[in-house]
Image (cartoon, rainbow over all chains, first blue to last red; front, side, top):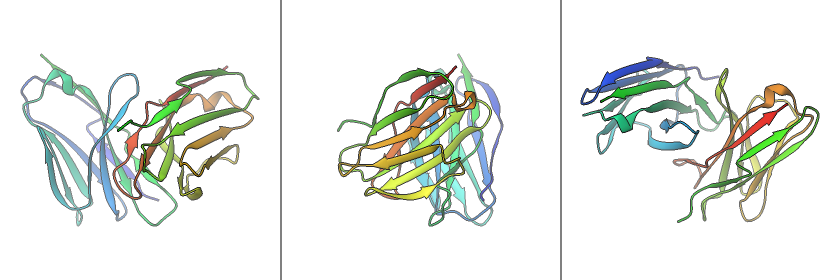
Length: 110
Length: 111
């Protein structure tokens, strides 16, 4: 069974700061997902990646398969980025579906 | 393209009752997964259906069941409700093993 750990659990930063959220997993995966959840519950899938790096706007996700580690970066952070960010590992081919981290609660202050 | 829809959005039930939740995936998506989110346990995988067949199942008791219809719509059922079943239930659809698109969730309260 895959174990997914996220850090930090909580992060408060000032508008404009560069944000990094980390995710590590214990077992090899077929894909890693980064999700964003706003108050009220709605979840948006930000990235799905299995190698390398992806970029979308101010968001960048990287993954190091050998080290079993992924990072989500937010450049020029804005108060609207305030949300819970969750990483989820997909082992693939097994019976576990997605295994989720506990989430990082991010607050960007103006 | 319409997103994933879930009904109902909110539900209050009493212990011992059963409940059925519905999920309509994005048109063309054949995979539907269900998740439970609670403050204590976070997000947990319940099960995944693909072309009417359960493809994966999480570690939940048999009171939790689901099915998928030929039009890819899915339902999940929880029987003999317990207080601990109070949670946000999310479904997500995808084309297969690709990126998942989440619905708004059904918030179930068991009293």
